[in-house]
Image (cartoon, rainbow, N blue to C red):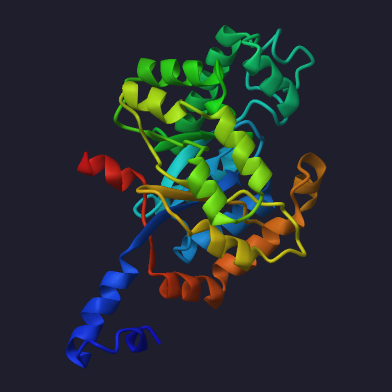
Length: 307
């Protein structure tokens, strides 16, 4: 079908032209929420095994992280394994008497409100970031290749400041990349994919994050998509095709595959849509989409080697 798209080229040159078309789009596909529950981790490992992912983001604040860490190491050759900084789900790894007085993290709305008013207890957040980073390293046996955030908390004012400080203290500038959960307004509007409102809100909250990160020596993705309504009855394949439109130079797409289990249902509202996403990623429809759009899966860390 692609060959028929180039009727002016001799057959001997069509392979070269088709290869050039396929090389036009490169993107990293990151599965969020590893270790959120056993079922989520199992689904992500299946997708990794089929080489459908090039990044995985890990929640280290759950009880399932220690027992599920070792399974990730076999995939490090083709997937970046990173820290999914958590400040909104469950409990912190250490005492946070101001931020989490009840022993549980506050809601996302409370965190965003506090960040915008510059009222978050930065010292407590900085210590929790260090605890989560150290817990990742303790069980995985190496530093994360990148850091992002559950519900995109890493881009929030005050939180980003403490994140930069923690990574600089670990001497990791230039050694890890950071997720910029925002994108340009033009790209978001032209993409017409997923949850437009979510993408716009996060882009506003994350304004300036990439610039701040670059000033401190951290690489970020350029281009971000994957916002979803998490509707199990929705057209996820159609949504995903939209995520690949108008890609950035280091385009990153997030996804949330996995199996729904009792543990997941008890702690997170996003349940059966994870199975829908996993089915698509493991299906021939996913690889056909990559072929038809000329898309290639890459790691963001590969760009660090070029800089």
